[in-house]
Length: 95
Image 1 (cartoon, rainbow, N blue to C red):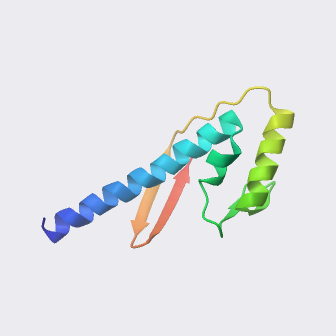
Image 2 (cartoon, rainbow, N blue to C red):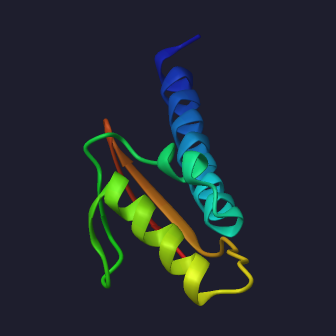
């Protein structure tokens, strides 16, 4: 496989893995599933949801408690999604 094709394949795989995390996140919140939600984060991740900012473990606890108390139905949909790759860094925005 030539180098250009290998680079494109790597980018497609990276984008797919990022998309898969987004879908897993939405599913975890909808199902109030702690294990799935926690699997969306690296151990040293920080989540900033404006009304909450903190570690992945603290966010997992907060988010599930919040959704469990204040929402009777959960349905997250993934809409607009952009993903810019820069080497080992990815910059994404998803609604």
